[in-house]
Structure formats: C-alpha cells, structure tokens
Image 1: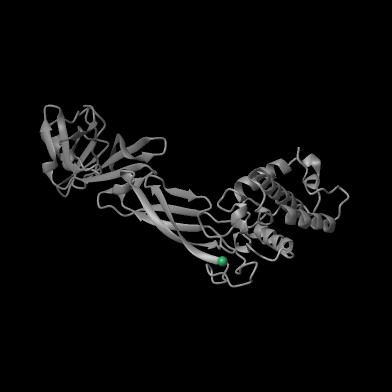
Image 2 (image 1 turned 180 degrees about the horizontal axis):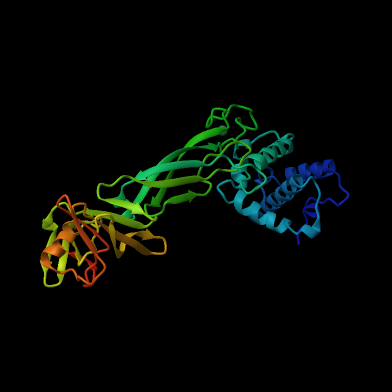
Length: 361
Ligand SMILES: [Zn+2]
C-alpha cells in the first residue's frame, strides 16, 4: 500500500515544516511547466509523480501531517482525489492553466496557496465541509401532466465557485482580477433540470448553489397539483370523481336493474361511459365505487384507483328503486316520507352492484 509520507520522501518523524519543504522541492521538480522539453514517456511519468505528490500532500495536510497506516484510508483518498479532482474537468493542466510562465522561484508557494484554496473550496468530496443551503422549488403541475407522466424541464440560476481562478478572485501569477468572476470568486450559471411529473418530490444532488468553502447544495422540486374542475387526488395516487345525481335522466331502468350512466372525457383524453348497476342508496351517505388502474402512476409502475363517488341529494336513486319496485322488502331498509322527500337509510337492493368504465371511442 502506498504511504503518503514515503511518496514525499519523508518519515513518521518528519515535522509539518519538513514535509512542506519536501513537497515544495518535489513540486518544483515535477511540475509540468518545468518539464515541457522532456520526451513523452518521461513527461508522463513526471506528470503522474506530480499528481501523486499533490495527493499525498493534500492528504497529510488534511490529517495534520500525521499518517496512521492502520486507518488504511489513503488508497481510498487517492482514488477520490484522482477521480474528483483530476477528472472532473479540473485536471492538473486546468488547475495550473492560469499560472503558466510564471517565475519558478515562487511556483511552489503558489502551488501551496493553490492547493490550500483548492482543498477548501473545490473539494466537494470533503464531508467535513458544510453543505450550501439546498434550493427548494415548489412547482404547480396540471393534473393532466401528472396522470400522463409528462416530462418537464426547468432552468434554474445557481451560483458556482469560479473555475477559472479556482475561486481566488485573481490570477495567481499576476494577481490581476479574474475576468471571469470580476474578482467575486463566485459566478452565476444556469442548470437545466428535467423530471417526470409522476414523482412528487425530486432530488437533484449537488445541482444547487455553491458557496465558498462549502460543498454544493442540492435542489429539491416539490410537485403540487393544480386544482382540477372534475378530479381530486386522494390517498396520494387515487383520483376522486364525484357524480352528483341532479336529474333523473342519469338513471335508467333496464332488465339488469337500476343503472346510472355518466359520460366523461377522461385524463387519457378518451371518452367513457361510467356505468353503475344497482347502486346503493341513502340520502345521508356518499357511495364510493372503485375502478382499479385509472388513478395516478405509482412509482412501482402500476396505477392507483379512480374512485367514483355518487352524491344523490334528492334521492333520485332511492326513488327509482321504489318506482320500479326492485327493493327487496325483506332487506334492511327504512323509508319514510317527510315533506314529500324519501329519506332512506341502509337501503340496498338484492342485485349485485357493479361499476364499469366503457370506452366509447
Ligand atoms: Zn474567477
């Protein structure tokens, strides 16, 4: 296993000053800018060595210049260092692109300064850093879009550490104000986020704001359904559709019994007849009938229910049963007449109640 002290040609007895001195010396020796005249292979070797010593030094710096071989976390750190820092568009060339052609007497100090800021400002893998406050967005979505799981895209403005000056605000070499962030260290940028409407809460990890010396925050999008004239969401994934029986025309008498028929254009843009045969009836209760798979998408790829609620304030249903003589007199029911209105409690007919959704186009 690699040992960061050995990489820097130091020992367990080395002091922080000695380690830093050694690092400066090696950084100068292996810095890519000092070795541009070397042949390809040696150049590559030096570049790798340069990365290795930078990694070893940042590790030791982070751990107060101590290395405990029993912790065995240096390999892991090296991997993270290599993947997060050198691959994420911030490769070593990028890191030093602004300090080309500088006076090499001061390069090691500049590297130190760069590494120091780099550590605190860029190292998003450092969980010790506080996370920038998350961004939470509430979005109102049409029920139609939720039902059909329509893909949505939004653009958000976020702040980012300036990558051109490594959030120093100036160019390391010339100390000139950075022309990307105008010395602010932070720049504004936009993120395009896309999501599907079936999800209530969507998390976009590390897509939020980024403040100096902090990790990047997350973005949360919370979807809310806009009010719909016909349907209401209940129990998260079910849809409630209320049918008020305001006229007798909805009720017919067939050889299958009393039938309620209601035409509806549904959220899938198809036309249906909702047919309820032999509905239960009572003045004081709403009756609910459930149709599976016509509710909203549940993330397990099924759908919730469409709940049809019959509301019959004038007791047209009860009246129809009496009119057509289909109430089983031995069944538990109670009819009284009050101000010419039938009031019925617990009146059920003996035929089977059912609901169908018949597509008519
Ligand atoms: Zn800048």
